[in-house]
Length: 212
Image (cartoon, rainbow, N blue to C red; front, side, top):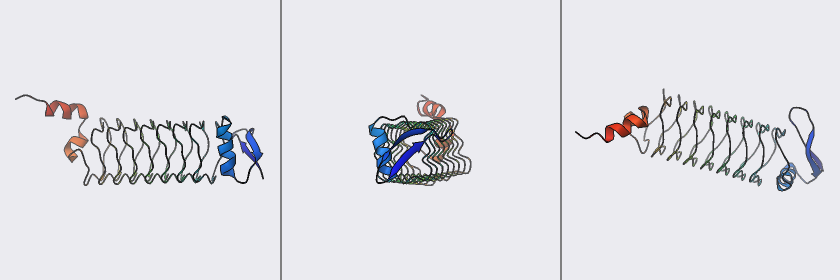
């Protein structure tokens, strides 16, 4: 079957060829180092697709199935992933700056070393996700489910965690300066007591090192 991957805005063809399914077409495009910037992949079934290092800047992957997909080192800057299924996806080292992940399913996803600066994760499911050393600077995690998520050494400076569920999450070494934790569920949070979580790391560090 002939598959054409088109620009989401002007409908121009970014890549085309004969493939059995869209997954194989996208993998071929990535192998060919095709520029998939602004690609229209709405609702695409990309289960277990190898997208390592893919350039999907500004692409539309709304409601796409990316279960177990390998997106290690991919460029997903400003990509629309609203409602996408990223269950157990590998996003290690990926760039998701200003990406839209509203209501995305990131259950047990690997987000280690990923850059999600300014990303919108409103009501996203990050249950059990490995987000160690991830950058979530100024990210919107309002209403997100971070139950048992690993956030060790993560950058959450200025992030909004209003109403988020952080029960059982690991926050050892996390930087929460200026983060908004209004109405967040902090039951069983590891690494910090509730009080130090709310105050800035700078104040916490200062208080812990006071010599009386």
